[in-house]
Length: 110
Figure 1 (cartoon, rainbow, N blue to C red):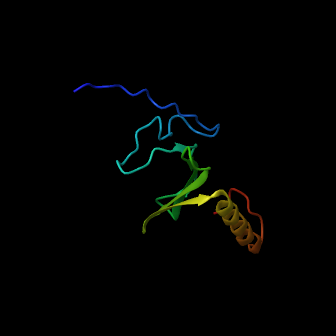
Figure 2: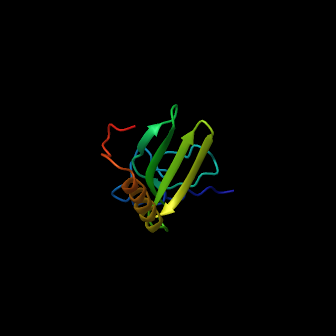
Figure 3: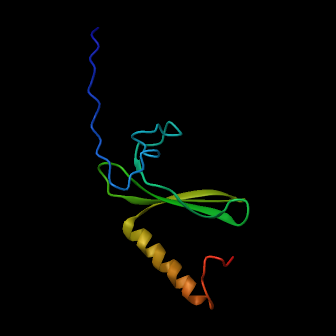
């Protein structure tokens, strides 16, 4: 039996890809997880209080970027991968909800 060594595939990283989170550079947490580009995480909320939302960009070489969304609270965890148009629709819906609330929407409000 002769062993041949395959050259490692060259991976091109998008500008938004975070090297410390990229699935092509950092092994996946679980074996079934695909190796994908991952951008920096953005967090909103507190998991010990009302809940936490984490978002980031994610993609594979053959696919365009998607928005990864993880939600965590005392009742459990959920996640979704939204296409860019779906993420834009979610943003519009959130803006619509905020428009219904009277008063200032500053960062200090709870």
